[in-house]
Image (cartoon, rainbow, N blue to C red; front, top):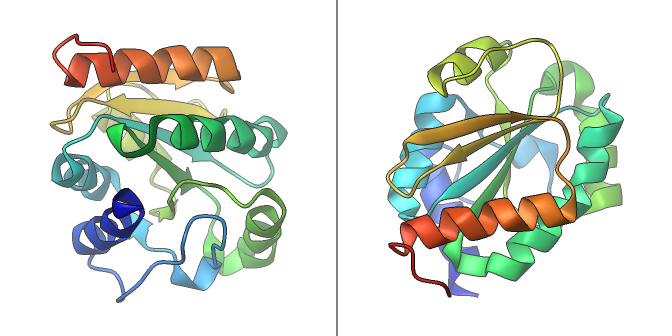
Length: 176
């Protein structure tokens, strides 16, 4: 429960956003902050936890399907891991589509909007490249340093194994 309260507060501070974020599962597009790589990195640093950040879009079927997997990972790892969704859709044009996805999928992890057109810059700063394909997963260590950029939707076993490695590295190799 503590983690659910801290993440929105830290997310707001990192983004300079409004006074509150909706709880996970009850996302409103109008309430989402717009984030770039620097804001994402600041958020990860502020939480002191490793992170799994998903770049996704409403038009990407595998992205939308992956939300269930990422919700399961967030529930399983709780406050030991930050899972964050960054929608690449332009909210000015795709707000109804974004809201429909949020209403149908009710993600159990925080959501934000990637700076419009910011995919290339975000991925280059993370050590990857924008090839126009989604989803992309960017992992960060607990200090906010990017570790890897992964292409394609994660399966639950793959996402769980990735989360376990991230959490173990943050714990100095100790298993939870």
